Image 1 (cartoon, rainbow, N blue to C red):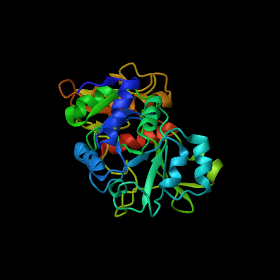
Image 2: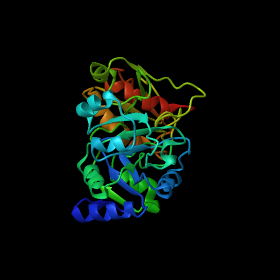
Image 3: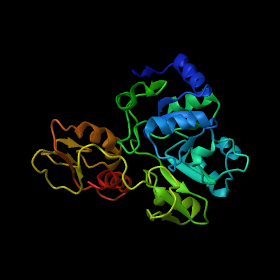
Length: 314
């Protein structure tokens, strides 16, 4: 399936398809999402089917405005402070579901929580406004694979399985949102993103970093041990490439086959990460992928989180 350029007509058509139970891929500032009306169980079931996603892995609900949250969850005072500072933007909040929450139960994977965010992309905003319903939207790719940051990635991965693909150009952030759990007294980051504890703590106090404890229910997307995985084996902290490996550099590395950021800019590296992994994941050219060390500063923590999950079990 080819992607549709975005205009008033395509937004209207996409909104109609969503309200009718369809599945539409659309851009956000982080990655392309596979969207469905979050209030329709059958539509949400199509997301899980198309992605091959485990039913125990919850979805994020995208809202058009912060005031939509009150009808879905039980926010506390921290929510107001965080949404004023970071919404629209790459911050997902995990909250307790309202008893009368209209969101399909499968979105929360049987938990009494719901993950919500307001995306910061004009196409996503237009689509939510036109649909007038919250949209469940995980990344628009097969479960566990590298996330899509271009409409062409969605078309290549999912083909005619979706009803429509909206082409909003490349995603500017390139890493999925930070997921922050507010269901306990001390907030916890369940999935690292470009917004870290240093930005959050001045507003809400101490923030813990969640460890992937075995036996604990998956409370948010991005917590599976093996995730974001290319087809080729991936080796981390590489200073050079072995025979037939593709070297993915960071900083001034003239021998790199690909470079996340030649000038060592972590925000640029985050934006380029998934597209670079896709470009390098070519078994006709390479036998594996070798990635240069990435500093843990700022967005580097989130980049390394994705790379470690991509390399898991390799």
